[in-house]
Length: 255
View: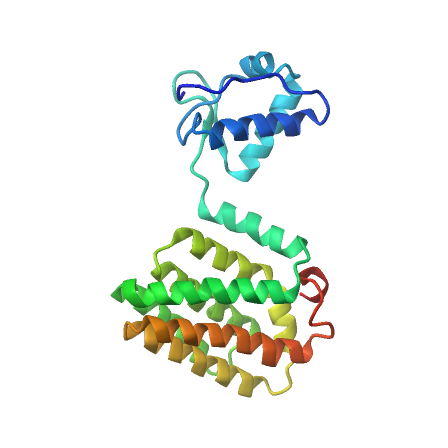
């Protein structure tokens, strides 16, 4: 276990397990606990924090569910509750649920997505490898296939944008991009199914995707950023707003 410099202090007894969570989070944020470190045993945490064993166990269950801890039975240095490197899908899931439940205004979601994807496209134009470009082309080819369902089109569309983010090399931006796309998936599909001239819209989206790819493949960061931002903003302004009854509503009500 890492050397502790901040004291483990007893916590108030109201909402006890949440306060136990807060104490453990403090140790992580202060750097006293790092990936691979083992938490003190349950009995020791009970004494250190002045709480019941039930409160400690509940807090540990929450952290395990979040992917922050992994538990190993037995004795020895590898047993007990170990601080884990939180996997990307765990962060993406938390962000997705937060976005979906926080009822953000549609304009805020569009602005965040446009900003994220512009930065990702610019980075991808300077950093994309042949493997990255191949993944983007694969998503484009799948979107170009005849007879795709709207669900399949949306999934390949999401894969294309995720591939751009990953090519940019910023893991946090990638996770945030995927989280935003996942949070609005249901609404995008609802919008797609309300569009009468779907093939015309799909053709427009395909053309815009290919233009973004061409700019990234050419290493033109400025054009790639401009094109993907115009694509995101144009789609929401020209298409989503045309079929959503309350374009100023929050994400929970509109999406």
